[in-house]
Image (cartoon, rainbow, N blue to C red; front, side, top):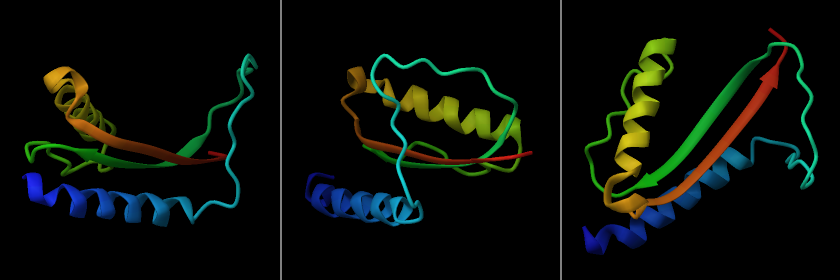
Length: 99
């Protein structure tokens, strides 16, 4: 809804800021740097997404690999609608750890 855009943007920013506050530092690789292959890790991943519409089903994400893959596939499909113009914002946070 057109009138809800400001509220939605504000809520998205609140959630993204709250998630970002959980981290002590941000790592961004330098341009042109190469990443070396390391050993397997476990990670906690948070995705904050602002997308137009209400058809995206987020239920069951994180309960199993198959269900999480299904949710991520649904998000990817929903973001392609209207040439991607329906995706307003996207933040990904992750914390790797030893398995």
